[in-house]
Image (cartoon, rainbow, N blue to C red; front, side, top):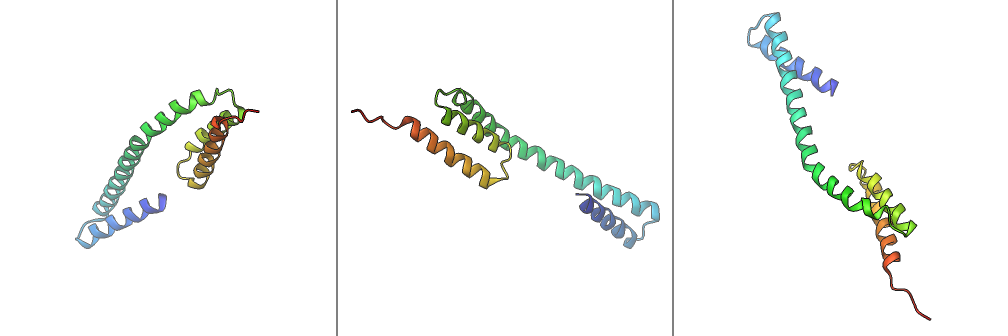
Length: 115
């Protein structure tokens, strides 16, 4: 991010200099470019958090009772899944946790054979 801000500053300053601006004006134009870039990045981050927050809250609400399940495999898999949801960018970890959770729930809910 630092490098991107540095490049935005240099670009804004160069544009102001080409347009005939003074040193102070080119520096101010560079700072304005950095401020605009940081503002856009902050807005994008807030939008992403807003989009992801509700599904994660729902997943946590659903997983909480499962973590108290009498079957230890289901409880452990639910906890593993909830931990994997913390890092949504790590899709391989999330997929592995989902598969383990599915296997644990299927094993716990499979009908028992009677003798």
